[in-house]
Length: 333
Image (cartoon, rainbow, N blue to C red):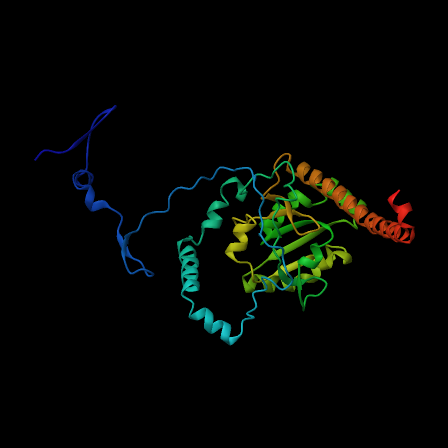
């Protein structure tokens, strides 16, 4: 019996019987067939394709299409019995729910921890400039407990309106450390100085997402310690969110890894104008500061225009009244 041999640049290498059998019968080494629990058909169990893990610049605006509303994304069921029954009998909603379940089943359990090995979890590079105001999308509303009112639920949207906000989204101590590279006084003293000088316009808002009830319980146990680390006027800007953060929201705001810290620069109309992820790279803190300064100037200019506008309208209306009282010949002249 002749043995199969593999010819290579280093010479002739004899093959093992199992390898030789595999070369002669490749059809026997296809991926195994599995039966889909949704369609009932047999499909090949293909391994997940290799993903592109290179860091890319965040060049497109992120966020939701519609402005946030108070009470949204609370995670509390508000549908009536009739609405639940109608949704149960709606075939289109069944298809949407099936698609969501398929995406959840396809997602590996340890994917986020595996992705954290690449670039220390950083998912994108921050833009050097702000997103245009007319192209920017909206930051979602979150509902959670604050340090000021730990027993009541509060919305983030009223806090973000009418101010420029540096919003941090974290889940765990590792994300807290990443957030600190952007906004802590030690790593970014210029931002701390800007917060002191423009405290009535610029603010920091912290959103801690803990969907695991056990972790959320630990955070609530240490709320007194969190209070001591912050000024009393900032207690209402720290949110502990336990539910309501859907995969759709995460995709919209580019939160591709729930274990990583994210930073968002949100204007007074709740629009995302800049974003950062993971550890701060060179130049990203500077672009955050430049974005804050530009938004503060835009906020002051808008407030100035709004204060002048009523006066102009009053003078214009007074001028119209005077013209009405004048004789017709004088008005025409």
